Length: 382
Image: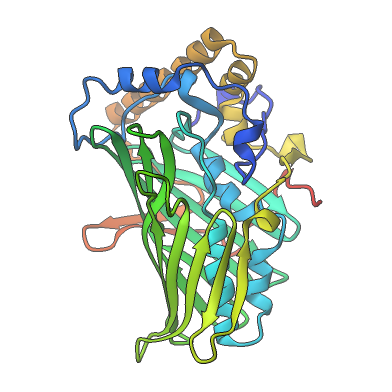
């Protein structure tokens, strides 16, 4: 839960993670690999790192909640609109595949976003697309996302529960939770999962998305199976993706998908061998614009860019003492608020989502509102 005493701080917004993001980062501390291995020296292999706290030296100046939202609202091309406007079910499924790939952003080795605090929110608009996120659980960490575009009649509902584990020379994060894209005018719902995040320390440091993604649409009977492949020790297959678009009833392959998710991805029609580019990363996730506050009075006290504003200022100015003390203060305040709730026997209830969890289906986050309102923070168009 966010304390309302923090509402005197102003929002600090930074450029989204993008294809050229690593070139723009100049606030990283030196000797990161040595520092990281030092932090993990006493951590056992296989340990869950969910509650592992990083000092600001290893943080980028934004919350994980913001990074999660950026994957939906920060694109140069309107890939979501393309999903709605494609004429045939097969073209729409192909567009959904491209959109799902666009959510995978190149990450920066050695640094990570802040772990969101309970009740933290992030509310941003890009044109008619309004996106609202809320941290609905802290232990375990669960983030919920709801996005709507009333003009295009589309809705996105995501529930994200990352579970990072340490394996000696790497950290592997499984991203649990269902992702849904609903094309309301067509009555179609596309359900998908997320790949894993792999952070390697040795022999060559790096960050990659790896693993299998399955996309299904029961209404059209079409689906896709994608595999994000880990690079070899000599760097081959870096950021590569292979897969297929299939007829779910017959399991017949209709298109073969191949390429690199940080450059171009193609789909080849197996009937005639014709090939087309379905995703171009340079056109979609490069040169992304930083969100801007359009209505300072409408920014919630729980907004990520407000909650972490002083920590972000410390990181951006490389004032590590300020960043460390401010971050420590926020974390200690959250622990105190939890103790107060526990003493009163209270259970935290999210403001914007109804949340449930069971062993079979995991976490499920249902938006309380039918439509997300326009936000006080906007992404400018090119």
